Length: 418
Image 1 (cartoon, rainbow, N blue to C red):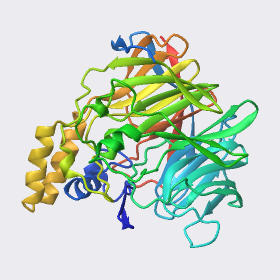
Image 2 (cartoon, rainbow, N blue to C red):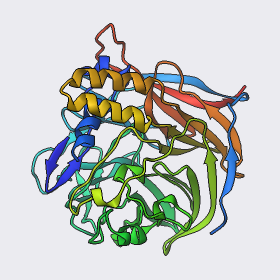
Image 3 (cartoon, one colour):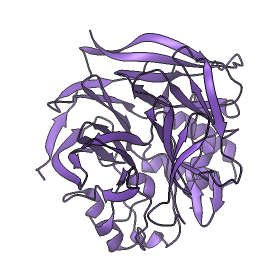
């Protein structure tokens, strides 16, 4: 976590240091949450979800990344020939083949002309030899040895921003009319903030980036009927976008709003096709917040509220990862304990509350958007998130709490019919 230029940056906490508090999660934001909490178209179609009796996660293969540190799975190339990891302590990217053998690595933590600054969004593969990522200084393209290929400044100078990182959640690469594009989270402030109505009227969630022309086009507003247009105030984490793309179809969900919106992309932007109202059991409601609590130049993030955390297109399915949230009443109790000075007890109770959070993966048919069911995370895997690539899901195995390990195991998983 860092503070600078009136920014609040959310980073992951080393798993081994806080393993008891994390309930076996590699990067649980226990004390991070408390630090930030106390500071800082068409008509919608309803979709109901039953537990998936005919689907399951099936482990196909595994690989071990044998390095010291605290690596997180970033992404998998479409060919599955390369996997990307990020080691938070060293701020180093590590690239492996399918067997887990390290083929290259680089870090840009020094203040050099090709350094991206603070990492804002995990990278995506442009090919087996190049990645694109977003940092405070702009959007960058590197080869896997760290040689800078392209640097593009953000449309606006980034002064205030907040970010949370999840395994497998990052930028997207696509092709439109034989041209290469990126999708990345928009960081424009538009000279406003969440305490003003103009913020919600002018909001755009994503940037469509033309790599050839180095042009940014902001897309995906708060659509008509969105709860974020209801006059209340919302934290950045309340509407943080999760998105995936396949061909010209863009699938987007905004934070704690349980709606999936499907767009058609073109070089001119994105047009809304349809909205699906996701009825998720145990998915809580965002707390009501007065706009008076917000001030210009500040960013606050809550890690306990309900959210659609990621979307993956996998072998004809949409895999929608959700986090049901911790109740507002529970968080108020934890806040009181924390402010009383008993931080250790507050952290322990937060970890206990995390165990009861309803979280899993909704599975939709990509073509029809009809539901197939809900899948729970396989036992012993990291519920914070997973990557996808080559038609498979790639999950982190949780570390052994009793025995110190010097490797990270990754499971190659498919969504299978029983």
